[in-house]
Image (cartoon, rainbow, N blue to C red; front, side):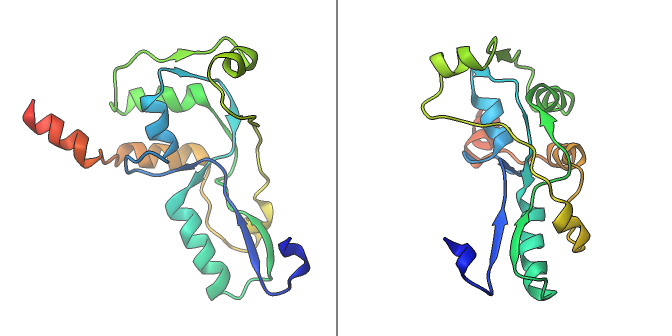
Length: 155
């Protein structure tokens, strides 16, 4: 619908994550789900996404669509391994056997896996770090939700 309009940006993100625990954060979701689906996807570090959007406007980049995902893709199992390496949990994660099992037992809506090409954004000078580096930076500075901090203080 927006393609017919001139003078606007379409900023696309995919599976947002950050270093703060919240219900919309991919890392928080992985920590809370009982079973996971192994998938290869693009992810977007929210802080870098916001900065890229601001820079589009400040730098007067050409209007259009920008995929503001971190460079590359990542497997669910890699993120789980890093979560454990950074000491966020010692939970043993369980995975669905395949996507058919996931769709049959857990999914409530159709889903897709994809890697978005962020080359246009990078060539424009926007800073979008490699996804594995961005995830590990977030895990190294992870901030639990206030409810989790309160439970730790009581225990």
